[in-house]
Image 1 (cartoon, rainbow, N blue to C red):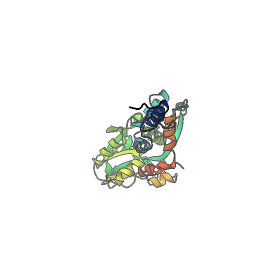
Image 2 (image 1 turned 30 degrees about the horizontal axis):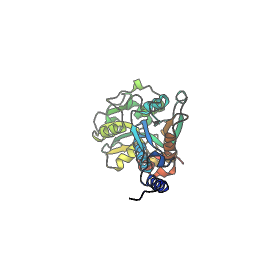
Image 3 (image 1 turned 45 degrees about the vertical axis):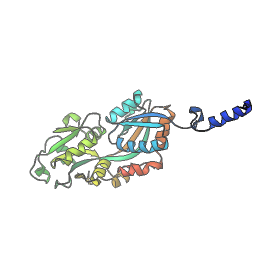
Image 4 (image 1 turned 120 degrees about the vertical axis):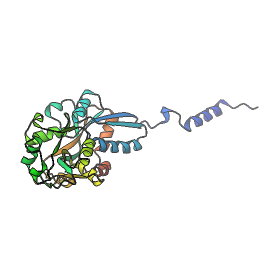
Length: 279
């Protein structure tokens, strides 16, 4: 059998190395790979998860885990390095901004929401305050049917609790609640299943779930309709930013994901969740 020359063998070896997957050395050096963990706000989590799915299709070597737990958890995890990216449905307080960077993903509001079968169409500022502090405990006292009001409060660490108590200038301990709820989806289920319940939650979440058939009725606040349109116009009294949080010098993967989440490439996903994208 004739022997192949060293030159020919070298050419064959080079051709074999060029074909197929030759390992890491043949991959795009700029390709992103790795894992990201996002934790925090249950308002931000659903849209972050949708953005993550689309990002993963663009970067097959990336996996993104989105966990809830409340805005306070998201802020603390980002600051402490327990998460690559935190999620908050409120602006950070001055004391929380040290050592982190805020990225405003979208805008939302917080509204009081009742069951769609409840005949009440609006509540004044004073009526809401009286309901949540226990001075009014029957719907007939605010133009509804004769039925006890089931007051749902939000758990500690939830941005909605801080925003509502700040708006009404009360302390959390002054709220007289029948039920305490954490996640937005828990609030949706509680009100959908009880015509006499009231809760406060994300305007975008309420609008989105109502569009999918949940029997929810967001009430106007201070005479302004609770809707994505009024949030977009800056007219809704209890507006808030939806925020992603990173540390300075975050990994290239975290920086890439945040840049993608803030781009107009995901505005459709943000609007689909009934939030208002940033320009």
